[in-house]
Image (tube, rainbow, N blue to C red; front, side, top):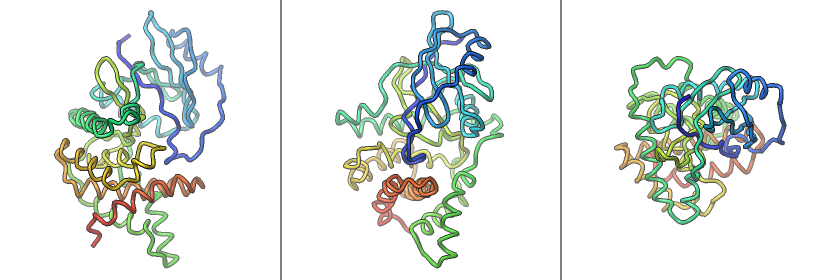
Length: 303
């Protein structure tokens, strides 16, 4: 069994889900993978909307077993992305099937701890390095099964279309129009993590590594966007214009990406995130994202 590390699954993403579901267990499925993969000593870590996570042991080494909820396509594309990254900037996927993932384990701090002790810009530079490691992976392997950004933005496009039919020129309409322009002219298309933020990166003996990818394909600038809408629940940081613009510039400089495109993707993503939240009746989460979009909008060329 390969050595390595994995991050503990972050708490449920408020901007995507809007509510935390109650704990539940599925001992039968857990027992199946303990026997099938010769694992022992399961210790419950956490539950998300898509999975239950446990530390497990194999030959005196600790790993993470992620037992998936049924019919979770994002988890399957996430596994494809981890295989693609092959440990470069991300945790290693050791085994997987349609029902579970076995991952390397890391017990280091989440990146959000740096923000909490006043090192926000340092954390952003770390995010930039993680993104560089992910995006530097050779892109010659097939990308079958990953989500295109066009598909990923579908809920925003649907919301904008509904607003147009109602005669409303909403922020969703503006966000969708900008997203369409960005996606029609992609630059430096890569396999993307798709959900980079301060609770999806953890320190390890190999440095800072990302986990829980969505598994997308598109312009690498998109991977900067979610970072600038986080970390929740620190509104004084996230909704501070100076902080947002400074961190956007840090990402653009470190990754050699045009700052205007970082801001444009951040705006489009914030509108997308709000549309996700609206569809789940999570009004507070939608407003969080829209507040970011409102900060960014004056800095855009929406003509």
